[in-house]
Image (cartoon, rainbow, N blue to C red; front, side, top):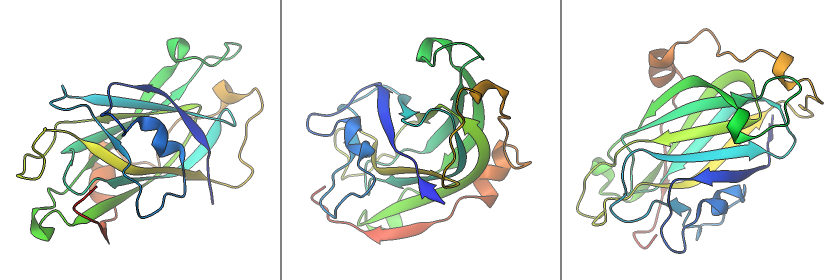
Length: 195
């Protein structure tokens, strides 16, 4: 499985110095601060990415949450454009793949970051993350949500030249509730309180 390159094409908001384009770096360092919403943001926040190779076969989505700017839930949607239409957000047709429910991180005293991995099977040109309200905590004084890392993976060499709309868009026989309970892996990575 290989990581797909993408570019952020839409983002509801970002805090100064924490723009969504930092997510495009698929190999962040330990000093990566990731994306953060604007202070006192409205919910939901939405990030849309476009795969640089066009339509790709998605198999795994990994989201590394900020250690204290934690969303309660993140919905995932795959986007495709009708056959013969140049890919654009205006023409994209969206299918909800499911949602992730994140942990409040209270038990680690907001020192760990949660890595969620979701296994899917679909074809997409776009991936949309709808990021819900934050978990309130004493560290998150500006009521923000944040994502440190977003990786999207699939089969090596997956690229559908001009046939994106003919490919199926589906999930591995799971409904949204199944994704939350059966496909999310909880891992914790030590993090600095300074990010």
